[in-house]
Picture 1 (cartoon, rainbow, N blue to C red):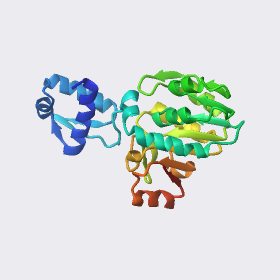
Picture 2: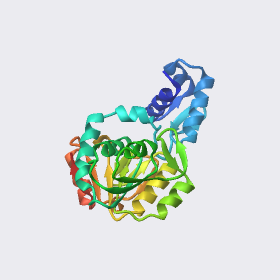
Picture 3: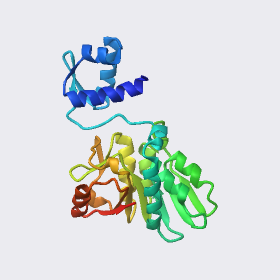
Length: 255
């Protein structure tokens, strides 16, 4: 097991068992107690666990280890394709300005864009920009900032500042998690800051998320339900979850 996989597994184990000792974790993962202590320190710095004498307990704040972009792209690929295809119906008229967030589902939306649609598009996501650059009628603007390896997207003050100067017709935004209580959330504060700016820089916000994200909560909320106009998801969405979201005023489009 590679270190990132062990970290993710360890965070889940602590969450499931509520309290785990260093020696138990060392046996579980066949590593030294020193390795376990280093792993717990990393998980604590991410806000995923709280270290206590001899072991760890779940952190008071919610969160989870971010999965790499390639791994996320492979997860529920067919559902994400359907979500992206359904989102095409929400594209604004030709000549409009669109903001595109980072994410595997937004990348699929770009791959499905009609080649004859003229748009002005701003994005901070390198993979999204690479795909948009091949479309002759798209006026592409790549936003500045520090590129995170986990998401291949620009983040930081420069990115947020650039977004805050914009006013777009529609923003297509991804999310790691969504509940009626916590809203739309993501593990990383820098990613959350950019998403928050995208939501506030547009007249209409559409969130693209496969149904496994609903009912989950990540550490940093970037938007409340009433700040988003429409959620596009797949038919794995439970009926009671849909009812709660729509009762809160969120339009839900199921692909």
